[in-house]
Amino acid sequence: MVDPSEFPILFGKKWPITGLATELAALSRSELCREYEELRRCAPNRRLREKHYLVKDRESTTRADSNRFEERLAMALCHMEGWRCPRMGKFQMLDRQVPLQAKKADVGIGEVDLLGVTDSGRLVVIELKVKPEGEGRAREGNPAAALVQGLRYAAIISANQQVIANEAKHLFGVEVSEDPLAVVVMAPQAWWVDWLEAPGSTRKAMGDWEREFDRLARDVEARLDLVVECLALEDVESSELTGVTPRLDRKLEVYEVRFGAVPAIGPALASLRSHP
Image 1 (tube, rainbow, N blue to C red):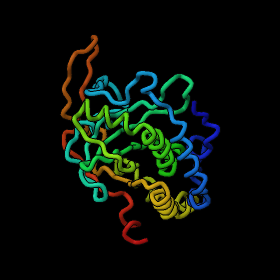
Image 2: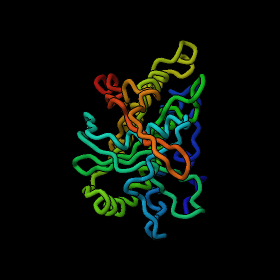
Image 3: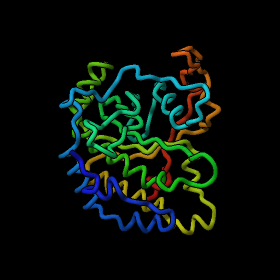
Image 4: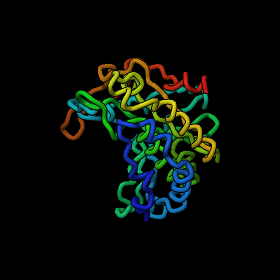
């Protein structure tokens, strides 16, 4: 059983907007990596409980009146083909909302927003973020929190990599390699802009957070032998989740969510990667 209190960074770290750059710079890389490896060691194993990780054709519909953009976006992303990332090459989505909990006692474990695989067989753990409803920024949803959350999921996925590889082969005919995982923070361009181009007072309070964030990502890559990437979905708005097909299901009108036009995808922090 995983005790979240034993993983203060992966489960309990708070990332305030004020002083975000300072918090990132001060974070102990050694402690973060120690927690990651320890979580891999004691990670829940759904197979021992005769539970699966992946589901073929997971329910991909939502109520017609649903306004949960993140849920609708994840559904639409699962239908997309031909993803390409400069550092990872081509990849495809396998499943969304992938469960990690093995038993009820595994509290706070959560679900992987999206799980993909590259053409070379590398598993891709994707933490999906969108702008919150209304004004302001979600403190718990800033890039640092998203990266740490992705690392938490990656540790558990890595511990069960062979089991997931077997499921991927059986359900999707996909070969998963033993390569280290990729952890991706993915969000619409508007979400990244909200953090990268914050107004003056907020910008000053945050500090040069993006450079410290990129340094942390590079340190994690080197120490844990992972790929860490930040990707922006360009020109994605809730109104673009069109091309839906209404159908009747359990006496409720529900919609299968798809993109009307496939969004472009690009690195969110490309300028920092090209200028160390």
